[in-house]
Image (cartoon, rainbow, N blue to C red):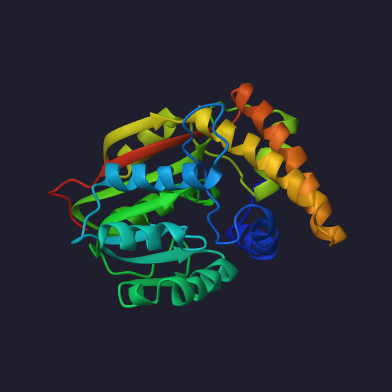
Length: 283
Protein backbone atom coordinates (compact mmCIF):
# COMPACT_ATOMS: atom_id res chain seq x y z
CA UNK A 1 0.00 0.00 0.00
CA UNK A 2 1.30 3.47 -0.90
CA UNK A 3 1.35 6.03 1.90
CA UNK A 4 0.97 9.77 1.34
CA UNK A 5 3.50 11.18 3.79
CA UNK A 6 3.40 14.84 4.74
CA UNK A 7 6.27 17.27 5.22
CA UNK A 8 5.66 16.97 8.96
CA UNK A 9 6.12 13.19 8.77
CA UNK A 10 9.42 13.69 6.96
CA UNK A 11 10.60 16.39 9.37
CA UNK A 12 9.76 14.31 12.44
CA UNK A 13 11.55 11.23 11.09
CA UNK A 14 14.79 13.03 10.26
CA UNK A 15 14.77 15.03 13.50
CA UNK A 16 14.33 11.86 15.55
CA UNK A 17 16.82 9.66 13.73
CA UNK A 18 19.77 12.05 13.35
CA UNK A 19 21.65 10.62 16.39
CA UNK A 20 21.27 7.10 14.99
CA UNK A 21 22.64 8.07 11.57
CA UNK A 22 25.54 9.98 13.10
CA UNK A 23 26.28 7.02 15.37
CA UNK A 24 27.16 4.57 12.63
CA UNK A 25 27.14 6.30 9.21
CA UNK A 26 29.31 9.39 9.60
CA UNK A 27 29.78 11.41 12.78
CA UNK A 28 30.43 14.55 10.70
CA UNK A 29 27.04 14.23 9.04
CA UNK A 30 28.03 13.16 5.51
CA UNK A 31 24.89 11.15 4.81
CA UNK A 32 24.51 10.83 1.04
CA UNK A 33 25.25 8.32 -1.72
CA UNK A 34 28.84 7.68 -2.77
CA UNK A 35 30.32 7.46 -6.25
CA UNK A 36 32.44 4.31 -6.01
CA UNK A 37 35.34 3.31 -8.25
CA UNK A 38 34.07 -0.29 -8.52
CA UNK A 39 32.68 -3.30 -6.67
CA UNK A 40 35.87 -3.69 -4.64
CA UNK A 41 35.77 -0.08 -3.41
CA UNK A 42 34.49 0.10 0.17
CA UNK A 43 35.82 3.55 1.09
CA UNK A 44 32.58 5.40 1.76
CA UNK A 45 34.08 8.81 2.78
CA UNK A 46 36.15 8.96 -0.42
CA UNK A 47 33.16 7.89 -2.53
CA UNK A 48 30.92 10.49 -0.87
CA UNK A 49 33.46 13.25 -1.55
CA UNK A 50 33.73 12.04 -5.15
CA UNK A 51 29.96 12.57 -5.50
CA UNK A 52 30.28 16.12 -4.19
CA UNK A 53 33.21 16.89 -6.50
CA UNK A 54 31.36 15.51 -9.53
CA UNK A 55 28.19 17.45 -8.81
CA UNK A 56 30.13 20.67 -8.22
CA UNK A 57 32.05 20.25 -11.48
CA UNK A 58 28.94 19.45 -13.51
CA UNK A 59 27.17 22.48 -12.03
CA UNK A 60 30.10 24.74 -12.90
CA UNK A 61 30.30 26.27 -9.45
CA UNK A 62 33.11 28.79 -8.95
CA UNK A 63 34.21 31.65 -6.75
CA UNK A 64 31.53 34.06 -8.01
CA UNK A 65 28.66 31.60 -7.55
CA UNK A 66 25.87 32.17 -5.04
CA UNK A 67 24.52 28.71 -4.22
CA UNK A 68 21.36 27.43 -2.52
CA UNK A 69 21.50 23.86 -1.20
CA UNK A 70 17.92 22.58 -0.89
CA UNK A 71 17.65 19.75 1.62
CA UNK A 72 21.11 20.61 2.93
CA UNK A 73 20.91 18.15 5.83
CA UNK A 74 23.96 18.51 8.05
CA UNK A 75 25.48 21.13 5.76
CA UNK A 76 28.49 19.23 4.50
CA UNK A 77 27.98 19.76 0.77
CA UNK A 78 27.60 23.51 1.03
CA UNK A 79 30.60 23.73 3.34
CA UNK A 80 32.55 21.63 0.83
CA UNK A 81 31.57 23.96 -2.01
CA UNK A 82 32.57 27.06 -0.08
CA UNK A 83 35.91 25.52 0.83
CA UNK A 84 36.81 24.12 -2.59
CA UNK A 85 35.20 26.62 -4.97
CA UNK A 86 35.23 29.73 -2.81
CA UNK A 87 31.53 30.41 -3.41
CA UNK A 88 28.93 31.92 -1.10
CA UNK A 89 25.81 29.98 -0.22
CA UNK A 90 22.78 29.20 1.89
CA UNK A 91 21.37 25.87 2.93
CA UNK A 92 17.76 25.12 3.79
CA UNK A 93 16.43 21.90 5.31
CA UNK A 94 13.14 20.59 6.66
CA UNK A 95 14.86 18.99 9.69
CA UNK A 96 15.50 21.54 12.40
CA UNK A 97 17.87 19.15 14.18
CA UNK A 98 20.02 18.80 11.07
CA UNK A 99 20.11 22.56 10.59
CA UNK A 100 21.28 22.95 14.19
CA UNK A 101 24.01 20.37 13.56
CA UNK A 102 25.05 22.20 10.37
CA UNK A 103 25.38 25.51 12.21
CA UNK A 104 27.33 23.97 15.07
CA UNK A 105 29.68 22.11 12.76
CA UNK A 106 30.29 25.23 10.66
CA UNK A 107 31.24 27.20 13.78
CA UNK A 108 33.51 24.43 15.06
CA UNK A 109 35.16 23.17 11.86
CA UNK A 110 34.97 26.05 9.37
CA UNK A 111 34.61 29.29 11.35
CA UNK A 112 36.21 31.26 8.52
CA UNK A 113 33.25 30.45 6.29
CA UNK A 114 30.59 31.82 8.62
CA UNK A 115 30.36 35.06 6.66
CA UNK A 116 29.87 33.20 3.38
CA UNK A 117 27.68 30.24 4.41
CA UNK A 118 24.42 30.17 6.37
CA UNK A 119 21.80 27.53 7.18
CA UNK A 120 18.12 27.88 7.92
CA UNK A 121 15.11 25.70 8.67
CA UNK A 122 12.54 25.69 5.89
CA UNK A 123 10.65 23.87 3.17
CA UNK A 124 11.53 23.32 -0.48
CA UNK A 125 7.92 24.21 -1.28
CA UNK A 126 8.15 27.63 0.41
CA UNK A 127 11.71 28.83 -0.08
CA UNK A 128 12.36 31.97 2.03
CA UNK A 129 14.18 33.90 -0.71
CA UNK A 130 13.43 36.60 -3.24
CA UNK A 131 13.06 35.73 -6.94
CA UNK A 132 16.27 35.41 -9.00
CA UNK A 133 18.51 35.32 -5.91
CA UNK A 134 20.87 32.43 -6.71
CA UNK A 135 23.19 31.54 -9.59
CA UNK A 136 22.98 27.84 -8.64
CA UNK A 137 20.61 25.55 -6.78
CA UNK A 138 22.00 22.17 -5.71
CA UNK A 139 20.75 19.18 -3.75
CA UNK A 140 22.02 15.76 -2.73
CA UNK A 141 19.55 12.90 -2.22
CA UNK A 142 16.84 15.03 -0.63
CA UNK A 143 14.22 16.21 -3.12
CA UNK A 144 12.64 12.75 -3.47
CA UNK A 145 11.18 13.27 0.01
CA UNK A 146 9.21 16.40 -0.94
CA UNK A 147 5.51 15.41 -1.14
CA UNK A 148 4.61 18.25 -3.54
CA UNK A 149 7.44 17.91 -6.03
CA UNK A 150 5.89 20.18 -8.66
CA UNK A 151 5.73 22.98 -6.11
CA UNK A 152 9.38 22.51 -5.15
CA UNK A 153 10.40 22.70 -8.82
CA UNK A 154 8.46 25.93 -9.22
CA UNK A 155 10.13 27.39 -6.13
CA UNK A 156 13.62 26.40 -7.28
CA UNK A 157 12.90 27.93 -10.68
CA UNK A 158 11.67 31.11 -8.99
CA UNK A 159 14.77 31.69 -6.83
CA UNK A 160 17.22 30.95 -9.66
CA UNK A 161 18.53 33.79 -11.80
CA UNK A 162 17.85 33.59 -15.56
CA UNK A 163 20.58 31.34 -16.95
CA UNK A 164 21.04 29.76 -13.51
CA UNK A 165 21.87 26.10 -12.96
CA UNK A 166 19.94 23.48 -11.00
CA UNK A 167 22.21 20.47 -10.34
CA UNK A 168 21.33 17.59 -8.05
CA UNK A 169 21.50 13.91 -7.27
CA UNK A 170 18.35 12.15 -6.16
CA UNK A 171 16.75 8.78 -5.55
CA UNK A 172 14.52 7.44 -8.30
CA UNK A 173 11.42 5.27 -8.57
CA UNK A 174 12.17 3.54 -11.89
CA UNK A 175 8.83 1.69 -12.15
CA UNK A 176 5.26 2.57 -11.18
CA UNK A 177 4.47 -0.64 -9.26
CA UNK A 178 6.55 -1.23 -6.14
CA UNK A 179 6.45 -4.53 -4.26
CA UNK A 180 5.65 -4.76 -0.57
CA UNK A 181 9.25 -5.49 0.49
CA UNK A 182 10.62 -2.46 -1.35
CA UNK A 183 7.77 -0.33 -0.05
CA UNK A 184 8.63 -1.27 3.54
CA UNK A 185 12.42 -1.10 3.44
CA UNK A 186 13.05 1.62 0.85
CA UNK A 187 10.06 3.94 0.73
CA UNK A 188 8.15 3.79 4.01
CA UNK A 189 11.39 3.47 5.98
CA UNK A 190 12.26 7.13 5.28
CA UNK A 191 8.70 8.45 4.76
CA UNK A 192 9.01 8.56 0.97
CA UNK A 193 5.65 8.52 -0.79
CA UNK A 194 7.07 7.94 -4.28
CA UNK A 195 9.02 9.60 -7.05
CA UNK A 196 10.13 9.73 -10.66
CA UNK A 197 12.00 7.55 -13.08
CA UNK A 198 14.99 9.31 -14.65
CA UNK A 199 12.94 10.10 -17.77
CA UNK A 200 9.99 11.17 -15.64
CA UNK A 201 12.20 13.54 -13.66
CA UNK A 202 13.39 15.21 -16.85
CA UNK A 203 9.83 15.62 -18.08
CA UNK A 204 8.72 17.16 -14.78
CA UNK A 205 11.58 19.66 -14.84
CA UNK A 206 10.89 20.59 -18.45
CA UNK A 207 7.26 21.19 -17.51
CA UNK A 208 8.51 23.57 -14.80
CA UNK A 209 10.44 25.53 -17.44
CA UNK A 210 13.94 24.04 -17.15
CA UNK A 211 16.19 22.96 -20.00
CA UNK A 212 17.91 19.61 -19.32
CA UNK A 213 21.69 19.64 -19.79
CA UNK A 214 22.55 16.21 -18.35
CA UNK A 215 20.77 13.17 -16.92
CA UNK A 216 22.95 10.34 -15.62
CA UNK A 217 21.76 6.96 -14.31
CA UNK A 218 23.98 6.01 -11.33
CA UNK A 219 22.25 2.84 -10.13
CA UNK A 220 25.44 0.79 -9.64
CA UNK A 221 26.78 3.30 -7.15
CA UNK A 222 23.71 3.34 -4.94
CA UNK A 223 23.87 -0.44 -4.66
CA UNK A 224 27.50 -0.25 -3.53
CA UNK A 225 26.62 2.50 -1.03
CA UNK A 226 24.10 0.28 0.73
CA UNK A 227 26.34 -2.77 0.56
CA UNK A 228 29.09 -0.83 2.36
CA UNK A 229 26.65 0.75 4.84
CA UNK A 230 25.15 -2.63 5.71
CA UNK A 231 28.58 -3.99 6.59
CA UNK A 232 29.41 -0.85 8.58
CA UNK A 233 26.15 -0.96 10.53
CA UNK A 234 26.76 -4.57 11.60
CA UNK A 235 30.34 -3.82 12.63
CA UNK A 236 29.28 -0.81 14.69
CA UNK A 237 26.43 -2.78 16.28
CA UNK A 238 28.96 -5.35 17.54
CA UNK A 239 30.79 -2.67 19.51
CA UNK A 240 27.80 -0.60 20.68
CA UNK A 241 26.79 -0.92 24.32
CA UNK A 242 23.47 0.90 24.04
CA UNK A 243 20.85 -1.77 23.29
CA UNK A 244 18.43 0.57 21.51
CA UNK A 245 21.16 1.95 19.26
CA UNK A 246 22.42 -1.57 18.54
CA UNK A 247 18.95 -2.75 17.56
CA UNK A 248 18.49 0.26 15.27
CA UNK A 249 21.79 -0.47 13.52
CA UNK A 250 20.94 -4.14 13.02
CA UNK A 251 17.52 -3.24 11.64
CA UNK A 252 19.15 -0.76 9.26
CA UNK A 253 21.66 -3.40 8.17
CA UNK A 254 18.78 -5.75 7.36
CA UNK A 255 17.13 -2.99 5.34
CA UNK A 256 20.40 -2.46 3.44
CA UNK A 257 20.11 -6.03 2.14
CA UNK A 258 16.51 -5.44 1.13
CA UNK A 259 17.47 -2.17 -0.54
CA UNK A 260 20.07 -3.95 -2.69
CA UNK A 261 17.44 -6.52 -3.66
CA UNK A 262 15.02 -3.71 -4.58
CA UNK A 263 17.69 -2.16 -6.80
CA UNK A 264 18.24 -5.52 -8.51
CA UNK A 265 14.48 -5.78 -9.12
CA UNK A 266 14.44 -2.31 -10.67
CA UNK A 267 12.35 -0.79 -7.87
CA UNK A 268 14.90 1.77 -6.65
CA UNK A 269 17.50 3.91 -8.40
CA UNK A 270 19.74 6.95 -8.24
CA UNK A 271 20.58 9.61 -10.75
CA UNK A 272 22.19 12.99 -11.30
CA UNK A 273 20.57 15.77 -13.31
CA UNK A 274 21.79 19.18 -14.41
CA UNK A 275 19.15 21.62 -15.67
CA UNK A 276 19.17 25.27 -16.64
CA UNK A 277 16.76 28.15 -16.31
CA UNK A 278 16.61 29.84 -19.73
CA UNK A 279 18.40 33.19 -20.13
CA UNK A 280 15.21 34.90 -21.22
CA UNK A 281 13.08 33.48 -18.43
CA UNK A 282 11.38 35.67 -15.90
CA UNK A 283 11.74 35.05 -12.21
